[in-house]
Amino acid sequence: MGNILWSKSSAPGKDDTTRGVKRKTCPDSLTPIKRKRLSESNHPTTSEECFSARGKRKATEDGKGEPTKKKEKKGRLDLNLFGFNLFGLNLFGLNLFGKESASSSKHSGKGSSADATRRISVLASAKVTLSCLFDKLSKLAELSALTIEWNVVDKRAEKSVVYTFEDGRAHVNRDGSVVDRMQLLEGDASLQLHNVTVGDGGLYTCRIITPVVYTETTLLEVLARPSVSLPETAAVTEGEEKMIQCDITGFYPEKLSVTWHIQNGSHTVQARANLLSRVCTEMSTRNPDGTFSIRSGITLHSSTVKDGEMRIICQVEHQTFSQPYNRSVTLTVQVEPSFLQINSIPQIPRVEWLLVLCCRVENFYPRDIDLEWSRSDGEQVRTVTHFGPFSDHSRLYSVWSEIHLRMAREDERAVYTCRIYHSSFPAPGYKDVLYHINTQGTPPDVMFIDCEPQRPLLDEECTLHLCIRDFCPEDVSVTWTKDGEMVPTSVFNTPPSLNINGLYSMFTFLKHTPKEDDWGSEFRCRVVHSAQMEPEERLFTLPAAHSRRLRDGC
Image (cartoon, rainbow, N blue to C red; front, side):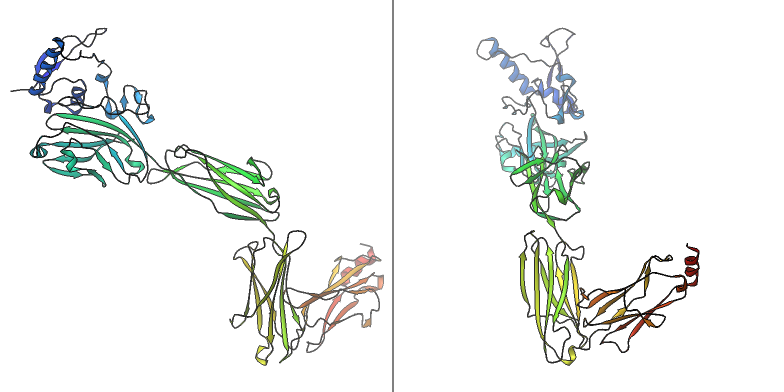
């Protein structure tokens, strides 16, 4: 016996409840869209349903049943489900039927469909259950005759099958998709999705044939909460700028807001672009998993930092946060040490005597610093005494580090290194100060004589100067001669100054006012030091070309 389908025809302007004409139709021969319309219209689809529907109408006519409610079908006849034209509404704008969400209707007949699409929003990596209910099976044997199909239409309007159950066996096309087999006997074909991702979002449809057809739809929205990365601390060198970057990754949907705030003490303001600060936020980029990432940076000048440090706040607003999310970094101003030096007592080491080396590091910020001593043969110096860090009135710090050595003959020409680690140093983050042990002293490195100005003029004073560097001990003798005769006056020597390497340097100057007969004159500087094998001399001759210009007044 064939199935009977009640069909209606309506003219424009007439009500949809006009009398229909009987015709025989097989539901299995219908397309999915026609079966969808058929189930929504509550028309009978089998002989049993036809009988049930006739009985229901008769009961209504006798006053024993509830009046049949009239429903508008016109809009549903134009339903384009997989093209997302649900009643002219925006499916993934989530404004379905003018509601945020709707619960599926309870099944009250032999085959039905939900009156509205349910909406579920979950976070990525969560487990979600998509409801699908039907009339309870009466016998376990009926499970083999049960057919279930779960499919999804994604954001690209592409349809795919997620899960099917047919001939008593399940077929899973999406890993982590589960329908509880025991719950099927209770009329529950709900789909469980484990570890959902952004790509799992879409319109899910459950279609059940018992052989009565049931359908139910659920709109699943998978959200991803942003991961915000910001360093806990940062430092800017005095007089320079520092860029701090806030990395925001793995969020969905794309809409997201980033703002920066500056907190100096108890006062907090939003960062604005000016001469001392700049904010730059890049365009978001799509990740392979469908989520988005974005980077935002703020550049600050050291002068914006008050009292040595301040807090910088990266504030993120996103749909997955109930309130703005803040990450902060403490920015400090760092000052590179202005003085690095090793002093020795005594100045010239002696065999079997005690030698004290003191590494001085002064005028730095912040306070954290580390000093290590080592010897040129790679041996680490274990016995070290530190003094400080101690602060002066300008909030800068200094520290001294001291080692004691008993000089031996094998220590001659050894080199001791004081390695200083501080955040103000550029890569690799440390500086070395060296001390060369020399029981004989270090002879000076005598430079060449220079003249200022390079082209002296007649009767105008010029200066001859010479640099004498890297010698020890500090005692040195310097004499000047002109054409072999001692220059008794107009000579000035700077006091020897201790270098970072523990050796001394100095300058010597000779002032002279050229006369007409000075062309070709020879000026000599003689340097005598205890560590030299013999004295060293440097010569400067006034060139003939220069002397002609002197006579010409050029």
